[in-house]
Length: 289
Image 1: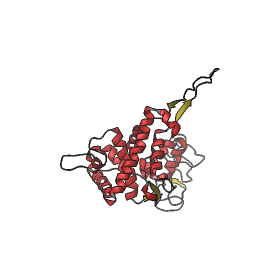
Image 2 (image 1 turned 180 degrees about the vertical axis):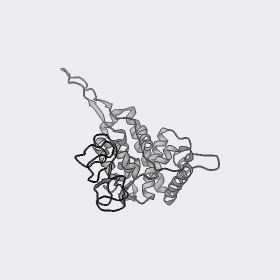
Image 3 (image 1 turned 90 degrees about the horizontal axis):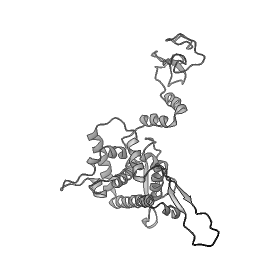
Image 4 (image 1 turned 135 degrees about the horizontal axis):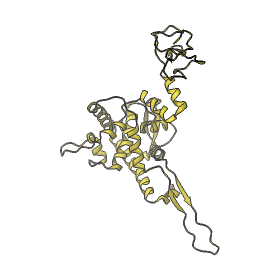
């Protein structure tokens, strides 16, 4: 890069506007200085403008991606802020959470059964996401009158993966909703829940009216959506054994802190998933939703 920053060191062509890549040959030539936010030669040890040790502003990479593909931009951001979230660990290594060897039963086996199927896996992932947010101090479950339900409250802003079940639950905290409503919204959002109603045409003569036909237009089933989201969530580099141990202890602590709360949460999740399962069998029940 020439001293004035306007000539490519690789192809020698003039560059009208400073940029990270040469518009002619595509080679990387500059970065944004994290200190002064100006473009500078990427091969220098210090910034050409402020003289600070050169540290690239990595958010510039994200801003460039955002302009091209919002979904890819989210992946980049999530990799930067990835936490070892419970839902992501369980979906990758389920055997460590559902075992029953006759003498010991894992925490998820106690709550959901030792023979996991897609329905139980989805339920456990929703449970784990909520438990993670509570145990890490992001959210809280606050009892309401006569404990008919619990309110989902926010304690601090979520700084983990946006594209995760935890992210979906965190976004809805502090909005005055019960956990039942929040679980329902998270599942509906992940499966892109929607339906189409076709009403029969009017007859020329009086007849017994026909009920409207309802067709499911959702992207996928509720259980598939929950599992997919968990599998797609970005995780930091980790060792399987340590990740499973850390997650297992977190879930155990959540359950032991308030067993009644944990079992109540299991019931709420089961009721929500059961409704969506019945809807998938008979979409007409959406009319009474």
